[in-house]
Image 1: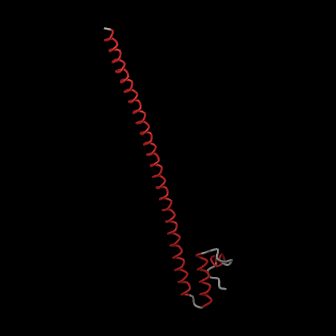
Image 2: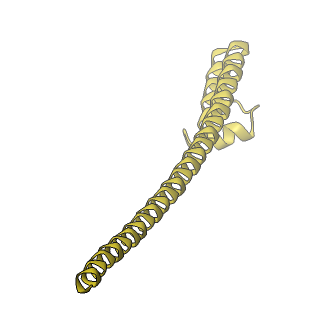
Image 3: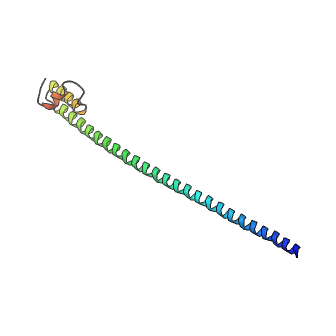
Length: 125
């Protein structure tokens, strides 16, 4: 009978140990699963931030391109207008003045007389 109690105690200890081991393993798996879920959430947030950054950069690039296109179109129009003015000039002096005025239209800071040339297009030097 004492042997039966000792055997029961040993088997109870083994069963208890296995239960404790199962609980510990379950807790460890839960912790690792939560850690992985947190890591995945962080990665998703980082991906969203990256995507927002790319979208913002694309919008900035689009705005820069639009401003450059506008400026290129303005320069093209100014060059065409200046060329037409030079071709329609009645003499060399008027053609020179029209050419200087055309340069001033494209680059107003090209010379000290640009402001005067742009303000008074009928002025003849």
